[in-house]
Structures are given as structure tokens and as C-alpha cells.
Picture (cartoon, rainbow, N blue to C red):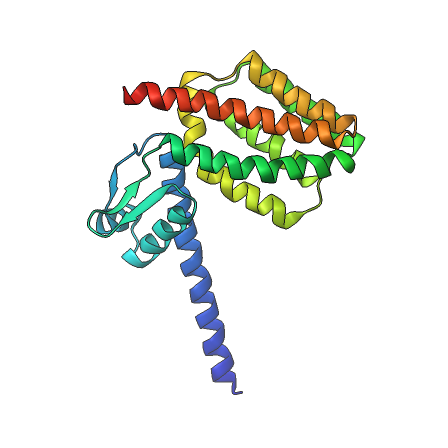
Length: 229
């Protein structure tokens, strides 16, 4: 292969990398707007307007919307185009049924392999959450707590699947946050999960996670049903 061909392929690869980076950046910005409520449920996302907003072509915008659709944050309709997801109780329960199965497995494995040296750092996150930070900080700490705990399962693919589902559920958490964050109940549930892992009790850890997610589903479902009345 000639030097010119090598140079061309290098430029092509660099261009593809930049393109993916732009698309990911657009997706990240839109994701933040959706989960924070800046873009409300049912809002139409017009590609031309978004391209103008971000100063890019419509191609990375289209790819960003496709990525957000895979996360459950955007729905692509043949007639209406891209629309910010409209939360429903059925979708909520489906998300959390799947999450409960995967996160219980991760908690079980984390308990079996729990590193005592990680206990204090995880407990410190819970202490900060219980101190009553603002909603965004609380959600950030909540995500870190679960992510770092599940990482101890030493199953990267499992953790990746959980994180994808948690991203898709994040808008529901913001709905929940408007109604009840933080609370003594959530603190108790998180501390039970950690205590079970510290005790290296897999069954207890798995059930603690399932209970935690069931409680979250019930509270968010009541909020959604109340808003629908």
C-alpha cells in the first residue's frame, strides 16, 4: 500500500472519529436536557433546528437521536419525527422489571466478592446523600453508589447493560425527584444494600436491591397516575 493510501486512510479514520465525537456530544447535551426536564415529555425534536442550535449538519443530529431512541429517551414516529418520550406506567414497570433482574444479579455477585476496603467510600456517598444535597447532586451520588457497587461484581458486560437501562430510566428518576428526594426510606434501602454486601450475604443483597427498585417503581407510578388524573 502506498504512502498516499496510508495517508488517505488516516485522514478517513480521523474524520470518522470526529464525526462520532460530534454525534456523541449532541446526544449528551440532549440527554441532559431531557432527563433534567428542560425538554419536556412530548416535545418535538426537529433535526434542522437542532443542527442549527449545535452548529452541525443534520447527520450527527440524526445519529444522536437514534442513540437516544435506543436508550428510551426519544421516540421516532413516521409522521411526527423525533419526540421526547412520554412516560407511562407500563413502560416504567417494564424498565424496572428488567433492571431488577440484572441489578439483583450484580448485587449478588458484588456481595460474594465484596472488598471491605470499598465499604467506607460507599458509605460516605450515602452520608452525603442523606445530608440533603440538591436533586442533581443526589442523583449523581445515587448513580455512583450503584455503579461502583455493581463494578465489584467483576462482570463488565452486565454492568454495561445495567448502565444502559439506568440511562433509559433516568427521566423517571427526575419525575420521582420532583415528588420525593431525598428521603429516610431511600437512605435506609441504600444502607441495607451496602450492609448486605459488607456481610457478604448474596441472597440478602439481591433481595435488598429488588425491594429498593420495587419501592421506586411504586412511588413513580403513583406520581404518573396522579398527573394523569
